[in-house]
Length: 184
Length: 110
Picture 1 (cartoon, rainbow over the protein chains, first blue to last red):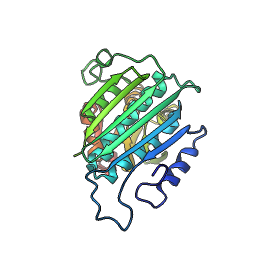
Picture 2: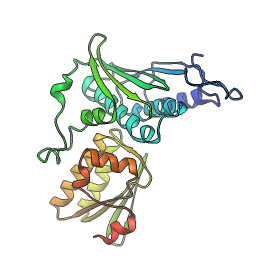
Picture 3: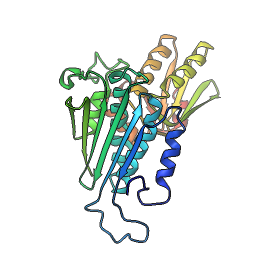
Picture 4: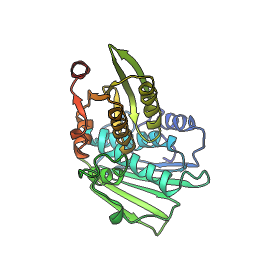
């Protein structure tokens, strides 16, 4: 069902409108899903997996719309209220802003790829940029220590780790951050 | 996402509508700094209409807190929902800011 709205009611069209309201252009939007359609609510969602894949320019103005798309996918599979309001949006915003600002240096010709897969068990999000990457272990400071509490930066990776069940980095396909969250 | 600023008695009250994140944090910072520049010294940021805040948004709040204090002013936060409270607790920023449950209590605390 590529390009169709999950659950109907014009969701995909709204998403395209939302993203196109930002000045640059989304390069590719692919969505694959198999969800109950209106009138067939008796179908079980236990085995449903929603997937969304986007390729965006390095512009922080895309972040809010992408977060809304992924959060909506999680909401369709009944993720917890706190996960929808805190864990998913904050951790994904951090991963996207890291990729756009630091990975790609906001370079207009560099892109960020986002792939999110959601099922009733877990959300797995991969955010890839074209930068040189960084060492996850070496990059984290403790922003809660007294000497760091007044720092204006340094909380991004800390929050990703606290709000997700796992945060991993790969560099076999560019610089990739993979975050996993179990549904609760 | 937007910010509205109004004066209530001698307190500058800022409402954060929507998200406070990397894409709009500078707008909030500039609006508050403009008021500080004009001589205002009491600031209240109200989060009753706020969705989520990222690390950049938290960073701007820390920055404003320092700048306001440097000028002899005071900053209060109000109306954090449970999720936002958790965010402040995770980062221990709840120990840095004076946070009130309601706007009225925040205003009374100056």
